[in-house]
Length: 386
Image 1 (cartoon, rainbow, N blue to C red):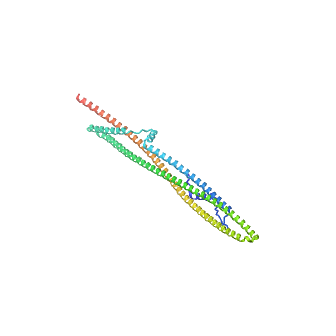
Image 2: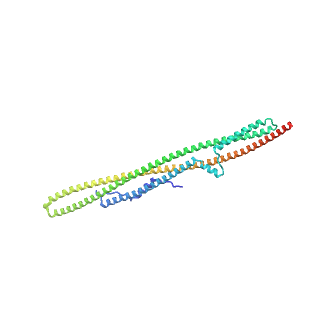
Image 3: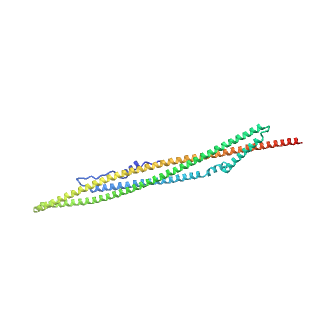
């Protein structure tokens, strides 16, 4: 037995969840992000993207293999249906079966000839009945002729029954042709549904590629943010060094206090600007987090669509199994009808042969009897003349 296709919902979701590392988020400390945390978060996103791509590629190959198998099985079923139609369109199978059993079918011309012989024999019997009305053995001959007439009527009834069975067989063959046409229509509908499923699957593949490109762009933006964060940290270190130098100068140079205060004010302004930049970076990271959430929702949508496609594949396989069962039952019914028709032909031939033999014997006996009567009459007539 063929294995049933596994549902793609749970397995696909579990593979996506297990493809990457554990969930990781950025944590700010005093309004700043450490460079090592940003690197780890970017590496985590890259690993998750790689795992997702691998899982999706595996599922794509499985779906493609399944569709190819279904296409191959559909072509085989179409070939079987066409072979059955060809066998039904000709009487080669029936002739081969009758030849195997040592039988020969009667042609229509021979059948009509038998009917003509039957009518001719009936006419001959009527003539004999008319000629022997004054005979002393009339009752015996009439009984024999009545028995012959009964046999003729039985043979006529048997021929009529055979004609009815032949008409019924033709009607069944026409019905079988109609069923084959319906099967062709079902196969065409299954083929169109399979093509639609393939088109939807390719559209989903393009959509996933777009998502992968978007995630790649987000990774580039995160790398740029990391570089800008490093530059800001370097600026903060430089500013701290300058502040220390200013404090040392204040202890030795009191006359430069005013200038140092102005420098300190400028540094505070720069620090506030740096803080604003850090807030901007924080907002950008928040936006990136939202984008990742949207990407996850899109992946879930793709999973749902993949489940729908898998359900359609299961439905097609169920319909394919039903079609196979129907074809087998029709083939068995055809074999049974063919055997029954061959048996009927054999019985009709046997009954016709027996009837012809009996009719020939009766005819010969009647002719012999008439010859004897004629000879007896002639002898009596000759004796009277003498």
